[in-house]
Image (cartoon, rainbow over all chains, first blue to last red; front, side):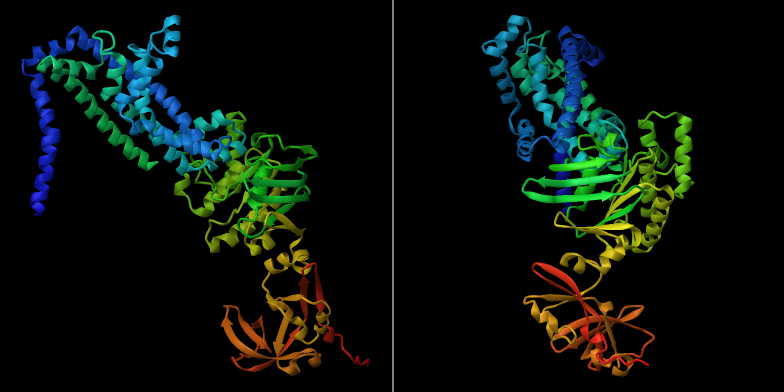
Length: 265
Length: 354
């Protein structure tokens, strides 16, 4: 019985993880080295990977800054009543509960060309939906809880006393943040960054709705894979997917390392 | 620094943590804020530090109102209950923190930190992290860190609560000596009366947000002004019908009066041991408890139970043994008054002059 269960576990792993990875690997090398490089050096591949890269950088920076800020406010702020804190705290989790496609749709509805805000931005000359700003917003929506949820428990655990001690020693908030708070939450933030990068790399639904998936303009790596699969370009799809998978494995290793450091401190 | 507090109040929502507290503290004094847990002591301390804003009232340092000054500007040192050491910094960096904030030069910082480390007996530990230190050492680091920027007022929140009993007594004496030597005005919070009595020049008793009494430990022990103070300081038994005891019959004149009798107000022994045997009452030894350095004796007089202590040098009593009891005084209280009554029988009814 026990052997059977162990065998079954291995089988699930094999079918769910190893086999697809192997298939992607084999698929991308189906036409040899040249097939792989050609798939990646297509104009749309390079552009899509670049879009994903830009998204990752911008979203990670914004999410880190605002996530850490909100976490600090939710845990420490005395000017917010407990009820408002509770409300904000539950809203933070909204993106976990709402499907990313619906998140994207909300952005199209609010900021799309047919809405008042969207029209205003259009007049000023900024295209939000079907352009980079909308994609950034959609990805931010999806990744928002990741940073807050990593940093809040750490802040709660360390308590406010070290910060109060710093204030009685004459340090103001900025100095206190960098010298006292930051070293304690550092590993939580790094873990949050890794999660954000991973989620941004892999985000599909919200970005698909907001970007319109326009080749060489708003297409990202994941939506390109989707399009290649639709067009039966197996080698091309596998090659881009392999690049994404390689990043994911790298992130996974980084995540393990960050998690260990987080526990030490 | 001279401290004045007037009409201090603090409310947390519906909870009135501190009510109409007034006091003055002279420069260089060591004050103990004593009271049961949750009585508002820490809130008072935190308001003095600026970590909490008073709901109303004034806090005046050196004749200057500091209510609106943030903690950074008040010139105070604060030692937290759990020390709140910066856990990712070494002992050296912890102590240096307040000086680095002030942008002192490296040599000044080094000199001051090393002298404090020496003063607190932490030499050789300056490169350790807080988690590599014992409780007592951490406490001393917290103390050194608070002193480094040369504060005018040192505030300590339950400074010995997290330290085991044996080292606690040692640290108390050390802290008292240290503060005396530095001459810095200090206020510490404690719920342990032995600690307050032993360390403080003056004690302030805080209960349910009110300041019950302020005075030297001896004054507070000798003449407690409220029933709470009387029962909180020292040990005591409450007696409902004190008028039944010989020498305290007058208490019947004030209906509803109860008495508080301390173990040290009571003497027990053979009738012949007392100078004025007529002042004693007959009791029975109920229980004996060995307390390490003395006996705790429960005696029963009629239906009144009292507790007293007896030296190990005297002959050992047995439960059930009849015994003579002399009650020197009782602390009487009713709803609107409190006073001390001496045993009337002790005044020899027929003095003989030789």
